[in-house]
Image (cartoon, one colour):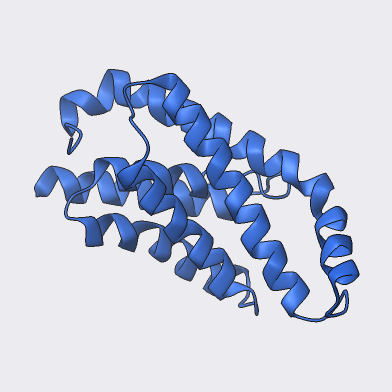
Length: 167
């Protein structure tokens, strides 16, 4: 359990620092933290706690917002994807899961923006909301892929010695 707490603490710190330092929009390690927390950490409640901790602490610092149920929910989806889908020993699995996570996060959070009413509660408003968010989507995907690649490389070198995967 001590190695799991060390891993959880490390992921929490990486997620917080990555979210709090200046970065391109949506280019943070938080999605990779959720994915790899789900794949690495045991018990499962610990893997859920890490991305929620990152989001809660950073939202308190950056400023609370009305989209928190959607952003936090998006991170929980990532944790479940990491736990049930991602096989960290295969790069293809990591890249596919990271892309899926970024896409689901994009769809969920922008649905939350649409629900907020800024674009109108019509189908046209929904489409307009998603189209307006497209310029930020590539940052989301690039962030998820970049940080997941770094985590995958670390897992294949350092972390396997420190904290064996739960699988």
